[in-house]
Image (tube, rainbow, N blue to C red; front, side, top):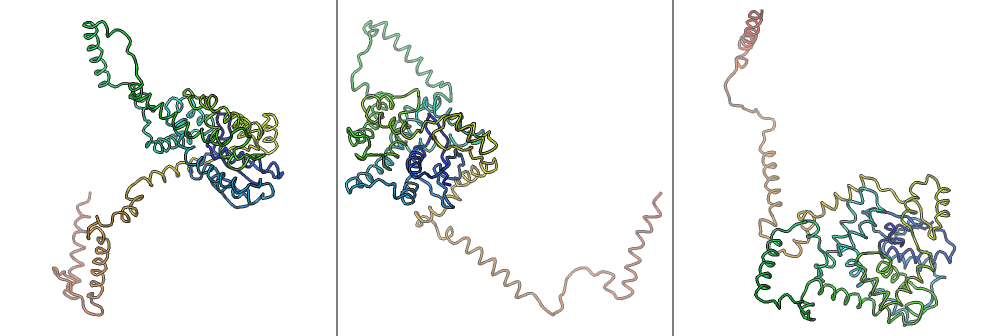
Length: 427
């Protein structure tokens, strides 16, 4: 039986990961036509990829590898495409992989309000306690690092929320208020509201970030809606293709989550309503609606019959099974390995030697070899110079036992004497 392991459900979608949602839609479409049974397992193992297919001992990670494997195994159900459509499919897949993760990272992870009120609670609802402390912060750190080049850190106000106070900022604000009051007393015109110009709006960090985000979203959503046109699917086919499943994975996480800063969903529902209808059509056709509490309840089942009973009672459209259990030792081991990999001496030594060999001195390059050679030479010399089969002379003060039998006897008397005195003195 084919088993698909995904990062748990969230926001009414099968997963909080875009590629996992795409893989679920892909397998639901293909395996339903083929009549092949399969299982959908929510996992949170940080040692493996979040999207994994296990079938007859073979393992395939990532949506691209999974799609190729499924199309090879179920070639009879692959929709034939023309040369133009194949080229468009390759270009569309590359476009989605290049721009989709960045927009999702900003929307769900970098934005502090969305992270605090939507994304973080979604992880809390589906993850066990120990993984809940390690996996979400790591994913957010990766998202912030991936979007650092965009220069939109002004929407991420972690420092303000974490510190709770800023003495230097407060002092500056007080001084600014005092200056304003003095100026207002001199000129009553300053009490009138200031007219904002386009240049002044763009110069403000929060507005500059907003314009940049909308530009980023339009650059992603615009070509997709142009490609969709008036058709049902992106490539003009009669049923969804692999590119459609991947597009659903990204667009679903942009449209479905209920977040405080829902500018992306509003943009899709307003200017790009065709894409919003496209996502809903795919979602309803494949019955991908998922409730987190229903999937979590499967973890309390003790038998396969009870799992089937919960599925029927909750009207699940997907073959969910009990969540995979990762031991505490495995989670701790994964975090220890990640911490060790961050040590520069262990992680970057080979890279540094390869990239900057000219900066290393002679002693830095050959110190270990020189020390090993000297140690081996001293050991070999000692081994060769040690006398074998010859009398060995030790220099030191002579003992009584060195003077023959009489000396040995006197030595024995000397040893017995102190013992006798000690016994006589004892009470």
